[in-house]
Length: 388
Ligand SMILES: Cc1ncc(COP(=O)(O)O)c(C=O)c1O
Image (cartoon, rainbow, N blue to C red; front, side, top):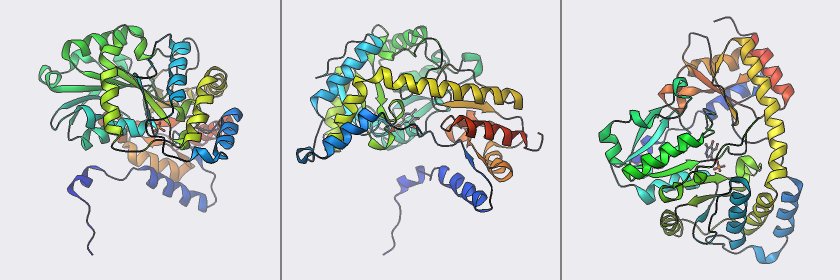
């Protein structure tokens, strides 16, 4: 049999991460140390109480059935967490839906709200899953550039009128991946007014909401007056609670939109393994103590890398949160060639900015997912690069 991919598959090119891994393996096999700052997978262990709950629940024979839309206590734990963290009231029955990781929710959501040819407003650069979901729904992305002049917040006023008229959905991600810009109340107020005026549903991806280093926590989109009329927030237990492999997340907000997502999801899957939901409830119920530890760790790492960038003379986007440093390297090379050159020369693995969109050309994303010694080692290695 001649097995052939569909035409649709042409849009889904393999991710570059496999090639980076291969180049790093080659370097390691030649006896060099590798400093891998590529993947944004949390390296801290989940809290003991979360793992204990998971083992206890997994031992219970009654925990192995389909869970469909999820267990009610999970939705209540999400609502309690929103109330405590952001003083936002969420109705656990109508304003929460569980997803199997936020990637699943993000990729499927445009199917529920966009028809062929509708526009989805997203950013350049952006987390790559947004475009995947948009393509699956046969909608069209419009990428709003993120620039230093606008503090890396998309400029809604710069979107052409005909694009705004065709737009059905606006996707935002603050603090973001790959650019760790922080949301402000004023900015979210502008988003709500824009969405209301043009009847555009907003999806705010808050995957890094608990990663902030000093000062105030990033505001929840839903804490903006009127936000629930126009939008949704998606958040995940992957990053904040180191549960990336457990695949559990949720969408909260506008009840009509949640109900439409429920209808779609009821056709797609039968829910997350119950012990994972039980463990996630424990995590959400203890969010403050768990995420305090995370912040202390990532704050230290962030400062190590930012100090290193200054010494190296690489320009960085200032930030007060997120899991990444977004840096412009001063070498006259395109970013894809540059990252392979860096692996080859000094064994440091970075992610080329252009995989997140054309505005990422000339930048690299540095993930803060290693111990301080590894981060310091990576900076020392980068200092050995031949001068630009
Ligand atoms: C901005 C952003 N959103 C969502 C996700 C998906 O996370 P998960 O599917 O583990 O919840 C990621 C993962 O890297 C991300 O960076």
